[in-house]
Length: 187
Image 1 (tube, rainbow, N blue to C red):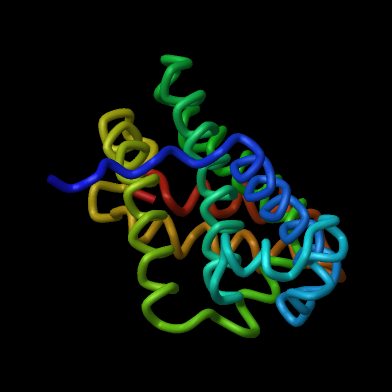
Image 2: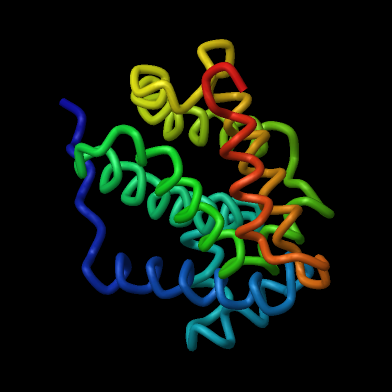
């Protein structure tokens, strides 16, 4: 009879969550080039603790990205629960834009130094699954052209992220409005 795996201890779960939050801050500030030794030091844990939770730096990048995607899931669920389907897509894109701006360092680092293809594919698939319910609702409301799908919306989010980069001559709001107009049914 196989033994049932033991649930992680509370302190281990706390350490893992703290490492993810610390890594997210470090990635925002310094990009992906920040060392795992520095992340462990900032988190106040030993390097062995970091490696016990995240055997490779890519695992830590995936965990931080998963946290950001969880925030997008919350934003998506909030706009879908609101019941105003005509504004759901716009509200979600505003939330995504705010997250892109807040996490600029990490977003730029991922763009400049993408993780290995397997990690990138997992992140992409998860993001598409986040977007699909929103796409269905936007199609029904006529706020997203019927020919566009979750893949198109993912590209649109990347575009608004690029348009919101520091040094862009105009406010991101302008580009968000332009993007929304282009996504609409019959645009």
